[in-house]
Image (cartoon, rainbow, N blue to C red):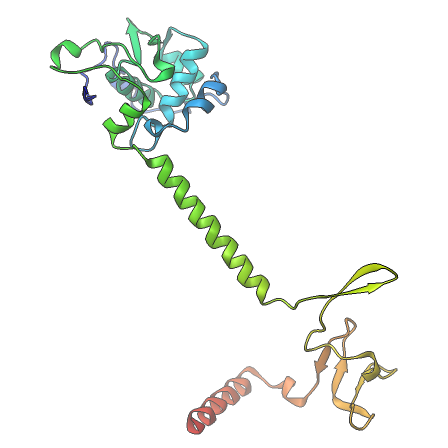
Length: 256
């Protein structure tokens, strides 16, 4: 089986002008003119992963598929890439025979969308060089084969861990009780620890001591039915609270 070699091509016939290396305004257009159907079909291939052909190659292939024979100056707008990225990506695609240029205009190879290229123009100087024989071969060439599978596996593991975390969190919630009333199922939430039965409510909003039936001095009933503890300790300053915390720690350590 022939092995696809990664080529390093020579300079392009129309290299960028050194004076154009510094850009004072954005180069790329706000709206690209690309074939989104082709891009959607190709973007899952490992050949277009990071360190492979890259996403800029997708954009240029999509632009040339819509309108063949474009110069780099047009691809800057239609593919929404910078001039430097366009030259670099075209060189990479040309190494695999996926694009060809006549003068300053670039076109796709006849089977470029399927990952099959024609012989690069400088292949005669590279013994044993062959054009691209499919996207899998290009991925092997760039060392990106299997990236999509590894990414899907990683995402599946992350989703499973997230679902497990949600399940653990749900286990800590109070379980509701389902009762039947008039033939209908009614969901009754389990009482919270800080909720009290209605029989413990006094008319003035205080809490009745269930053992004596008299209002408890230190407790109040909130509007949502929860208990509020009212004690002089609630008026302590930060320094007093810090001292009380330190004292509690000393007592705990001595008891231990």
